[in-house]
Length: 300
Image (cartoon, rainbow, N blue to C red; front, top):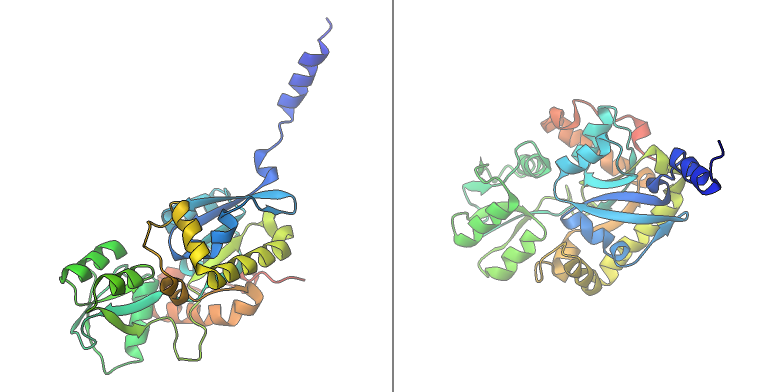
């Protein structure tokens, strides 16, 4: 029995389908300040080594972690704590670089308030708040964790229910803009005035993406520089893409995020300093240990 050529070709193609992911670089990007660093890359079609960068904005670190556990991304942006915790558990996504150097501030109406509201016990805001207070023993507020999210805490501050709070950008700038009685009380991002900040955000890379490391480093460096040098354009892109509501971001909020892409090799010492603090305050946040040197991707 003869098989028609057209049918034979169809059968062969069905047996050897081209994998869609072979032609794309899947990026999982956390909604929030991290997205500012990627604004330029979201505004146009970008290829890396002939592969199209496909960016998906994800609403929570937990969802990004789920994607990484399933191997559904070549590149991902998530909190440093989450990245290290996954790596320590055998999910092989080492650190490519760090795009943000701190977005956490204490804001409020009273710098000597007896109660400091924050959210996320055991997370970076909590740990860095406790670290700051231990280094500033003159202020001994009671820590209140009753609010479940940054937005709830922001709303409480504006309503007057909360007098002093730990907030991240862009909620910091929104609070300062909406209420003239609210001011910056403390910067939680730098242990001293000369420090660059804490590497609270991680960009991680899959094994499949390793050959793209130099090209990705260059793209990310340029995109971060774009956000810093052209904040108005970055804001326009992020609003058009629906990442942030209109008026939510300002040039000041971008400035306070300290956006600067630093590759893993150069960021290693700063990352280790942060992780040492976290290990001392909340060991389980890292899975009980610091990552080994293979967590830090370096070009050879």
